[in-house]
Image (cartoon, rainbow, N blue to C red):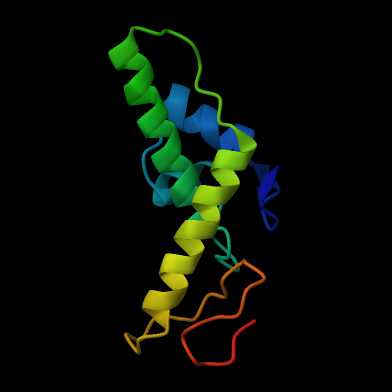
Length: 115
């Protein structure tokens, strides 16, 4: 699944970079792939994938599993939607952050007329 349309980077490349190459931040992904350098719409998704891979890697290590991390697409999409929704509600509170629309089809509760 493509995460960054601007740089044409998919989730598999991000997972591999985090799992095997030691990438831990969106800034490191920016340096490596050019992710989140232009429109920045993918920054939340990239951060979510980093968090999921690091958690899976820690769980594998605790269980003694020496296999590459593979994320379930459904779990990844649910986590990204939750992260976007959280960011959206924080942005709607007037903290000076740019508004990011929630990806769900339900009506927004922030009162700002979002989809």
